[in-house]
Image (cartoon, rainbow, N blue to C red; front, top):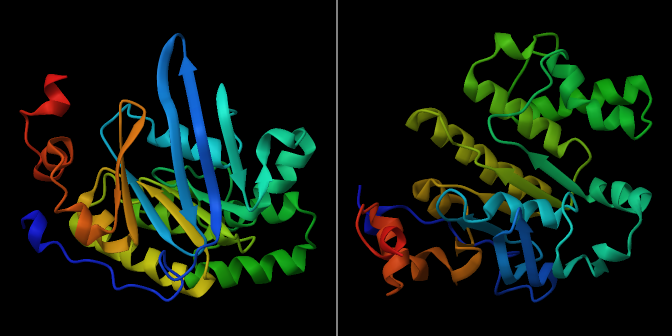
Length: 269
């Protein structure tokens, strides 16, 4: 299937363009590790209610970007503002409380091997001080939302890759987050299970009516779940557009990435 044939997501009423409220704002965000600049004065707004997908090659700063959004990393320069709050003004306790606005589904599920499915999904609920009966009810509800039944007592090692991803999604939505962060939700899955996960993500976004930021290498997935797509290269945002506009951008770097070409500016710079 060519890029031109990839299906696009149907616009939502809450998507960018119908809502001018900014949920997450990065201004001049710069981050270096060991003298290597990973983010280079990044400016990026995520609109409330939209599904933003960030793409780019390995090592371009995608994961570092979402870690700044949730306050797991602090910028060397610049500001990160979420729901009007400058994260640099929060102390350790404040940032911990603030993270409850987020749900994060990590790459490959990242489940706790020593906990059952119920233990994984209810982990944040226990930390938030919920009563056991309330936790059990919420865990069952979250598993139902990701179409998993009767798996509460299973261990992660007993689950398939797709099931582990769904448990990770159930854990991410347990506290009914305002913002959902998805780290490579389809990486390593076969095309059929990838499609299942993509449909589930779309379903959850509509049910939760939340803002979502996804990072991925999978352009088919990006076109399917995104309201807008941004591309990072060498720590800079080099493109930001709706899926329909994105695949027609004249930037040679974008087109090399979309066409999966070995030769071009991305590999020659």
